[in-house]
Image (cartoon, rainbow, N blue to C red; front, side, top):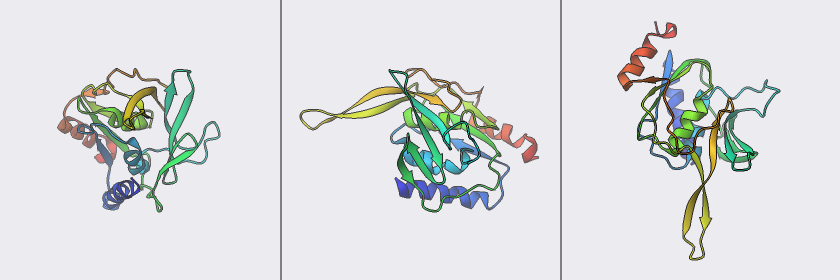
Length: 197
């Protein structure tokens, strides 16, 4: 997981150092799995690494909300993702993008499941971010593994997801993009923004 996150940050660094006017985060084919390597990998784009926010834990980009209403934050801070206070994935030398407020387009669609939806949610509420595409698969929930008596593992959806603004998502509802359209539509929109002129 750490290697994947490091490689993804390395790719972001390589592109950023060539000069960019905005970013496209393509989640069209993210069919789920473990959210932590991807979340850590796109950490430089999350706009969450500020230390000057006194009103909350640094780096919060989303929450798990359980049936009792308890919210457990997920966050990215200085190259490390956390589930509550527990570190999950770390990049030893994290990258910082040259323009942390650059415009971001997030692409999503019917193949965007679970952890793909978590990545989209982690960017929701970030300034200068717009989602494009089509409704997602509708599985924005947290899965927990339970070991059965025969040592088999069963995944149980035990919490819903909420974005950094506190909006809780329906655990069986699709994420709806800000604007329907293809990848080409999204790229055309990005290129029409003032920073890309």
